[in-house]
Length: 244
Image (cartoon, rainbow, N blue to C red; front, top):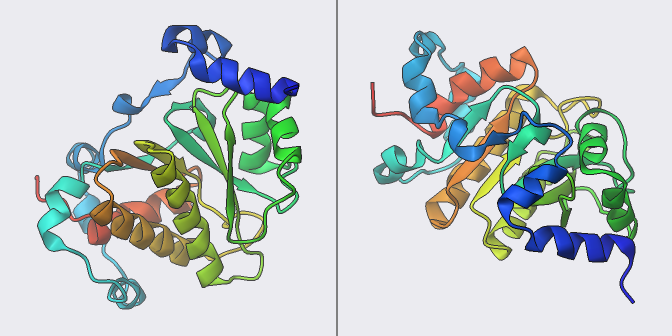
């Protein structure tokens, strides 16, 4: 006999989109096509070229090798989104979770509130999640179909943070998802340096997109002004825009 969360997860997954939209906690959801691609964002926001990387940025960027022939294509597959991740109607949103997968504060709490209590019930069945790993659940009352929960490092470990992004994207690939939205993992109360965190997120996303053509959009949700500033600068390195 299935539990309440199992039956509801199955029911929601089978609903036509218009019926599923009636479950959303808010009506101001945002469809993925309304989130500007980096190409459009760059053209629309004059003056971004003036935001130059630091010497440390250049050093960090040189740690990866990108396929420059894919620059134009991939600049259309990433976005900066300044807003509430729980409003995005995408295949998956990523939750900056704790290792017990219990609803907490910040992004974690907001996602649980928007999804409803059955999200916690499903999380309770998973037995927690170690740092750097990820788990996937249904989205329930969220506009997103799935929530991918990942536990960021509290000790400033760059390899662990990289694993958060890699394991989240591995779930996206496994489930054949075409759109995913990330918060700035570990940069809040866990205190990971914002700039290095952005380098890790962007380099991991870049390498994933070069090798996974099924993914149509990776969205970076930048809630704090400092993160907007950092991503507007670093996106020009990892996803150079050829359209100006």
